[in-house]
Length: 414
Image (cartoon, rainbow, N blue to C red):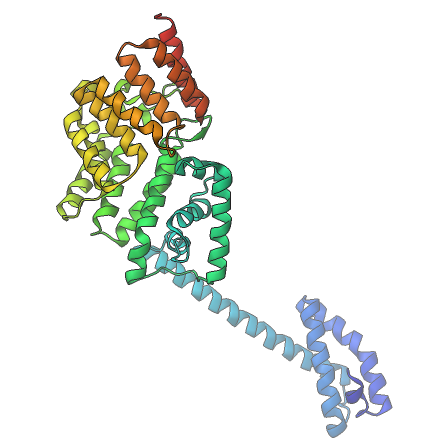
């Protein structure tokens, strides 16, 4: 009790309260088994006594009076706590009911849109989201963007700082804001899927769980935007490509190229689902990059044998993609398709043009593609050199082993 209050009591009452306080506290604490709350309640009872007793006189049973007052305080506190818990339980039950009925309650998608904040450049927004939502390492993201790891680390740090400065809150954007961020969100989903389908580093050739997560998120986005042709096209592309996962590696985890895969392992229900999604996306009228890639994947999936592949149609689709996207990987795949249609000389000529593109000039896929075409042309020495070069440039152990195996196989033919 404060000195101001105790001075209102006579000396006898002050001593009485000091003597009774620990007794009352012990009783209340034992009765309600909460020392901290009991201490607060007893203090309130002592204050009440200091205020009332000078007016009404000391009660006949002062200890009982203090215990009753402290107990009422405890009961009020307990009732308040019960009411608070009931309110929290009701909020939790509402959340569970919403989870069971909402079309898209996935907070991960909200996080996607938050990371694609307008204050960020598209490249920074994608990099930040890959870290925050996709769980990829900085090295994996750098590999996906064909930039050094240090550059990507700086980009992610700047993106975090920009989000903090902008003071953005966690919510699903709507209307125009949602549309403006959709392209970056789709790019993120696509990169996550690709990192799962072709792991850029480590001992596994693919990370199926990562591809599955990208498909799950894209399905959620498709449920949110069921009539968006690019969302539908991206989902079709993922499903059509993911259908080949079990044929892509052998018993030891070794890579098996598309033309040597056991096509009976391809998942026909998924191919049918992807084809149906693609047809719906194309029927909406606006053809974008994801729909074109999905169409290429569908043509590969439809071929019963590698030699049945419709390369002229695939080449035509890559030419369309080159018109709408300045992407060196598209140019590389276009060169391979051109080699299948017009001959190896044409394909190698198109690959040479990529040597001047800094984004891909030192990428292992350029060396691997060149080695493959040189082998088909019968130039084994040159093919071996490029297989070795590609092996030194990839950070994926299965890819290194595959490329070294190809080089060793050709050495035996010399």
